Length: 274
Ligand code: NDP
Image (cartoon, rainbow, N blue to C red; front, side):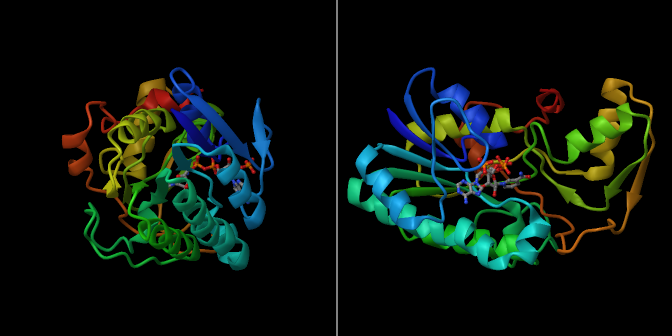
């Protein structure tokens, strides 16, 4: 298959790039962090983006690119809207022209976190601008029949909470674990699930994330697994955060578990030591 991958320089993009290029032709897009054989395209340069997609004519488009820094999105709302929402509208426009299948990656942060273990049909209600901009991006993706929105949670590889915990404890320092739950998944496992999904050409919305866990419990597991010094504190707020965070944004991935053969669900602590 000929696959166009946005965000090829990101955590998920790097894993997908490696995995998919074994059996497919992968057209890699990045913005500021160059990738080998990649094309530098700013997703907010909409005419260039549409033109590029139409000329390359991929059968499948995987949109992993996003402005993912939650606090930055709160401060730079206009930019967040352009990358996380408006760019998706333009990807959809181009997908329609060339009849491409679109897999769009979204987030647990579309939910308010009051309930937890969210199912696909639960009503989103974001508590911050990152979540809102991603929700708008979902709406654009869903306006296209041949698309799948994959919502995930706490992606980690070379960054993310587990990596912060590992590095901080290893240095013998104290970790602050923000009180609350989510479903952190390694970029490696998420990539394996996405590979299966593009072969199945599923449409609609699907939750693909790991088991529900509190950040505190997760930090403890990492400490035990790697026998690290440092101490762990559960905290109600984190200094420097601008945007609100949902308390329990964990996702119920039972639909995806029935559908997929890969075990994306079991927590992959090793997936962060890259
Ligand atoms: P990263 O932050 O690691 O990577 C983001 C990617 O988006 C980079 O490749 C970056 O390119 C690209 N990008 C950002 N802005 C632009 C732009 N203007 N034009 C083109 N490319 C751009 O993200 P992850 O891999 O962690 O996340 C993948 C997806 O999963 C995202 O859609 C995210 O919303 C979603 N998600 C992530 C979670 C997480 O905890 N990280 C949790 C839940 C969902 P470059 O670096 O070259 O500038």
